[in-house]
Structure formats: structure tokens, C-alpha cells
Length: 502
Image (tube, rainbow, N blue to C red; front, side, top):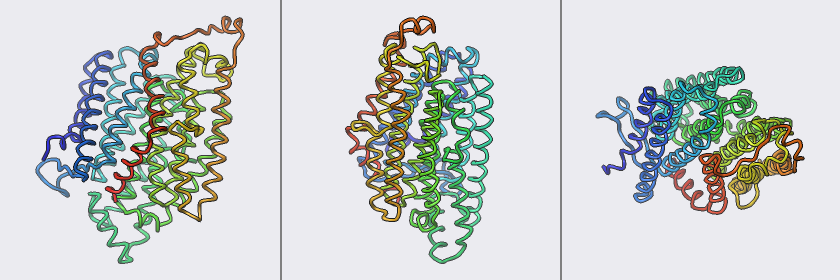
């Protein structure tokens, strides 16, 4: 075995043990440790990706001396390595982009606690990506939930406590349904290892036995993950969780947490049950309906918001709807479009949250829509970044969002029963996205009277006044443009990785 094949397991252990180590450090050193760990894991993920591309084959890493079912194992392919590398990149940029807000909004004595949560969150995301055991995935789903709840409430205001409680209640409901589905599946197959479950599920489906219990298990797991990833109408926890938590928390939650759950659902569809069985079970039709509803209703709610952070949060509801709509198409092209949209949305939504923070910094910390008038002139880089993110969300060429919408349209062409609904939903969603994002762009570039600027205490912010945030914004813009102009290699990696799943 090549040494690089140990990197996924080492990555999980590094992030896991970085949490307890951070507890004995002060905030400054905990931050340095966190950034160092994310960087090291990102480099190891890149090395794993290069190795898997070189061999052209997936591999299974057995932990300990015993094979499954007594031992545990992780599985590494192209798609896993791509997602691990991308998640590290986004988390690194979110952490440095929100550094200033964390120092101002979190008590100094509790800043190291924040990095404990970030390290555990990264650990759980890596485990969800790599694990080949369904119960291990559930364990790290719970670690992910607890860490995310800590990221929300670390700001310690009334709204964040309320948002954290609401998030915890909804997440525990989703976790309970996921666990019930897992228990049903274990009682049917006698296995927890994903590959073994798939073998037994295929035999059961072919023999015609236990169709209803198998369908119930699929439904429970799908609904559980849908709740945890904020699919409409299970999204009620999301606006407050994203809108009132500290900047880096909002960016990480919107970009990564829900995406980790969705990636687990892709693994369940392909490697636990089998996509042919999922397609014939008609569960995807339900996901398609709720996905389309989310695309529309998320944008409608965003239009009604006057708080820029809550507006961006409601936009996430619409974008999650896109992903589930792609699943609902029931085609490989639809799954590829959804996975690409996971990447695109993570890069764009974190950009929007960081840019919105720069805009509000230049507007006396006000999130109110009307106070943002002229903010694009007061903080030029944040204005450009928000405009770039908005154009990506609308689907403007050259940005990642355009590629996502194009892939969804192409995937819809392969399903004659759903093509009309998909095209209409895409058109309506694009128009609604343009309404609230372009309205905001116009607002921040509408000149404000100098007397009003002085009276309200607005100020101009240059690039070097917030260097870490400015660097994150530049990198996010570059990433969006890269995904928009050079999407073909990324799509090719997703296609190859998904073929390995099958």
C-alpha cells in the first residue's frame, strides 16, 4: 500500500484531535492551529486526488487489523477526494474571511471554543465523505449537528440562542428519522457496510421480498437528510441560523454543513441502495416536487426580506431546491448537475456572506436594506464581490451559477415527463433571483447624499483596512470565475467519480 493511501484516515484523525488541543490554547493560537490543520488536510486531499487519478481506481482502507463487519473501513475515489479538497478550500477562506467579526463578536475567553467546533465540523465532513459504513456516517452526522449548533450560538445573543434551539430541534428530528431508516435497513440486510448492504438490497429487490420495508427505509433516510439540509418546507430553522450567527459561522453553515448531508444522500442512493432501485421506488418524484417548490418559495421569501443576511439565507433554500430537483430528474446527468451545484453554491454563497459583511461594515454595521445605499462606493471590493456573487446566483455567463443552470437544463432534456416543469421552474427561479439580487446590487450602487453618510456614521473601507477579508473575497471571486470558465475539467472529475460510485 502506498503511503498516500493513509492520508484520508490521517486527515480525519488530525481534525478530530485538533479539537481537544485547541481547548488548552488561547484564541490566537487555536486559530493558527485550525488554519494549519485545514491547510495540511487540503494538501493531503490534493495528493489523494492525484493518486486516485493516476491509478484510475478507487480503494478501500481498512482501519485496524480486522475487516468488516468486525472492523471499519473508508472508501476513497475521485469524487471523495474532490469534495474533501474543495471543502478544505472553502472552510479555509471562510475562517480567514470572518476573522475580524469573530474577534469583535465572541468573548476572548471563548474564542478557542469556536475553533474546537470548526475542527470537529471538518472532521465530521471528512468522515461523511470517506466512510464506507452507514452507522459510522450516522455517528458523524450527530457530531456535525452538535458542532454546527455550537457555531450558531457562540455569538451569545438572544436571536442566536433561539436559532440554535430551533436548529437543534429540527436537526434531531432529521437525525431520528435517519436512524430509524438505518435500523430498518440493518434488520433487512444484516449489514452496516455500504457495499454489503447494496448486495443484499439488490437481492431482496430482485426476489420481490420486503419491498414495503425497503421503501419505508429509503423514505425515512431521504426525509431525515432533507430536513437536516433544509429542503423546503423543512427550512424554518435556516434564516435565523444563517442570518444572526457570526460571519464565518454563516458562511461555513451555508457552504458546507448542508452539503455534507446531501453528499451522504448521494452515497445512500448509489452505494447503499442502488440508483436503479431508488428510481423505481418513486421517492425521487417526491424530492422533485419539494425541490421545485423550494426553488420558487425560497426566492419569494428572499424578495420579502429587508435584512441582507436573511435574504441570502432564504436564497440558500432556493439553491437547495435546485439540488433536490436534480435528484428528482432520476438521471445520471441530473445527479452530476446537482453535485456540480453543490460546488458552485458553496463557492458563491460563502462569497455573498463575506461580501455582505464588507458592505454592512461600511454602513455602520446595519443589515437593513435601505441603509446599504451607496455601500458599493464606500467599500469597493465588497461591492464588486457582492455583484459577482449576485451574477453567479442569477446565472450570468462566466460565473459558476451559469454552468449549474445549464447542466440542469441539459439534464431535464433526458426526462420527457419532467422537462416542461423543470424548464418553467428554472425560468421562474432565474427571474426571482434577478429581482432580489439585482435590486440589492442597484441599491449598493445608488449614490447616497454626503450629509446622510455623515449623519449615519458611514465610513469608507479600503482593501488594506481589512486584509484577511479582502484576500478571502479576491479568492472567492477567482474561484467563481474559474468554475464558470473552466468547468469542463471539474465536471469530468464528477463524472468519473460518480462512475466509480456505481
